[in-house]
Structures are given as C-alpha cells and as structure tokens.
Length: 435
Image (cartoon, rainbow, N blue to C red; front, side, top):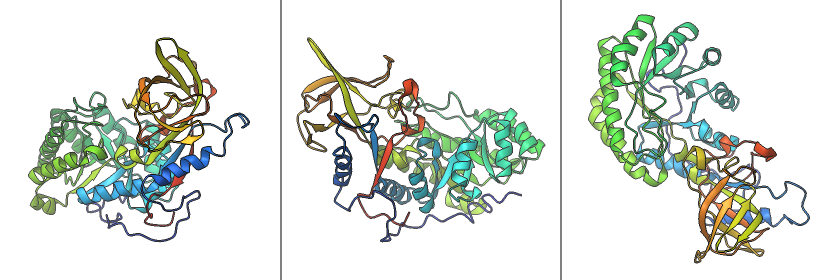
C-alpha cells in the first residue's frame, strides 16, 4: 500500500503559522524597503545597466521582477481564511523553481498534471505523499511512472481511466472529478473535465468497487476567475451526494478536493462561500466521524501578484489620425500568452520615458496607442487600445504588473524569440525562512 494520506493527511506537514527568520540566501534580493519601492528599484537597477545603442543582442530582453513576499502573503491569507483546506499548488500555473522552493518550505503541497511536473517537484526533495496527480486523463506510461515514484493520489472522470489504473497502478487512491456549473468563469474547465453526478454514482463508483480500486474522495473545479460563487456551493453539495453513495458501496472516502480558480481580488467572497458550503454539507460531526480532510489546487491565487514584467520598446509607427503603434520585445507568443490562453488583459504602464523613471507614479493617461509583440504574426497584439502617461518612443520601457499566473509557463520560441525571461528576485518584506 502506497503511504498517501494515511488517516487523512496525517504524516503531511501541518499548516502551521508562518514564522519569520532573519537569514536570506537568495541571490539578487534587494534591501528591505517599504511596499512596491523594492520592485521599482529592482526594475530600474537592471535597465540602468543597458544602453540600447551599444548593448549586445538580447541584453535588452524583457525580464521579470518576482516579489517572493507576495507569495508568502498569499499563503498567509489562504491559511487565515481557509485553515481547514490544505493547498496543493498547481505547478502548471508557474513552475519557477524559486517559487516552488518557497512554497515547499511553507508546507504547501503540489498539484502535478504530468510526468515532468512530478519529476520537478520530486527533484526538489518533496515527498511523493505531498503530490496529487490531478489530471483525469493520463498517458499510460505516465501512470506507470506515477506508480514507480509512489504517487498515491489521482483524479478520474471516466470509465476508461479506471481500467487503466486497475492495470497499471491499482493501489493508487482515486478522487472522482465531477462536473460543475462554471458558466461565469473566465476560464471554463467543465467542457473538458468532470463527470455528471449520475455517472459518478451509477457508473464510476460501482465499477471501481468491482475492480477493487481505492476511491478516496471527490474533486471538482469551478473554473478560473468565476464570478458566481454559488457554483462552489452546488459543487460541494454534489460532492456530499457522491460521498453518501460511496459509503453505501463500502468505500471509506475521506478527501474532498475543492479545486482551484481562486483569485486574491475576490478571495473574501469565494472563501466565505467555501466555508459556508463545507459547514452545511460537511458539518464537523461528519468530518470527525469519517476523518474528512479538505484540499484545494490554487495556482494563480498564490503567484499572480508576485511577478512584474518589464518590456523594451523596439519600434514605433506614427499613423496620421490614428493612435501610434508601439512594438515591444515580448508578446502573446512570449510571456503575455495569457492574453490568448487565459483571457487576461495586462495593463501597460510607463516605466521610463527619456531616461527618467515613472514607476508607480500618478499621472494622466493621455496618449492612446496600440501595443504589439515582436513576432511577424498579426495575432501578436498585446493591446488594441491603451492609454499611456507619456508619448513613449524607442528605447523607453513599459511594465506590466500581476503577471505571475499562466505567463512564463506557456512561452514559445516562435520566430526565434527567446521565451524564458530572466527573473530578478526581491522581497518587499522579510521572508519567513532561508532559501
């Protein structure tokens, strides 16, 4: 028997309060200064070393500043609002190694969806019991790899996957992924994953029983950027129905995975709905009786606010009676692929204009422009219409905040442009441990 979630989450790191320590060992950590000033200083320190008239090719490439303290703030906020729900960070959101190391040290577990993601986390020294293989449709060889590396929990939403697990990894714990109402979500997932309540109860549970598989619980995902938080309520309600049906078949289910899609901006509303739903459908006496443990798969919640992208203006086209066209050295094939894949709308702000810094300064936005990426594809448009505070030109820099989620994770090298941007690490407040 693979030692995963024995008696719930016992044996896993507890969600202890974050304690601060003094020593930092990350390279390029900036001195501790208030608020966002440390980010602005890191941006300016880097670009001040670049002379676009003389630098080598690529020296003026776009780059990130990552404020690791923002990741800590996210973990802290999660534990304050949802202390009973253990986070399993969605590695697909942003696989930055320093972020992964920090999350590991903060006792956050990991949601992996492929062999590569599993290996990445295991290579950091994370115990296999801290990983959920949260992909309902898996390659056979990846299932065998999960068995070889002692990954003991995965998600399933169809009959075929049960047969595959019975053949290649019969000891693996199973979470049945059910469909949710995610019509208001920015990124809908129910069109691809999740079975109906009827299928879960009348097909998957009986077949799993027949095959001798270990169904441990239920998983759902209401989609990213959901606006109607009643979808969480409905999903928790349906999950309880699966729990009840499973008990009648003799399963001892004890895990509920409430998925991801959480955002810091709306976390007060979503976490309130989670707590309300859990208290109604999984009351404390039920939780105590069956040793129910709750988990989630937050990705963007943990990292979106921690990354700022700086881009260099490489060209400008003046068009009579139309806004100027600004060309930058990053775009939808690079670190702003989130525009296409994640339905995001990054907001450009002026970082430098005529060698002066305008980071985080209040000013009137009076210059309308369109902004384009560096490739030869007309689809490579960052913004059809944006207003900037200054009439920027070649050699100036723009910056985009909140670009930590589903950005660097999906870059390409289309047209020969390098996708992986350099990252400078800073901390706007004291970090809790040495990295």
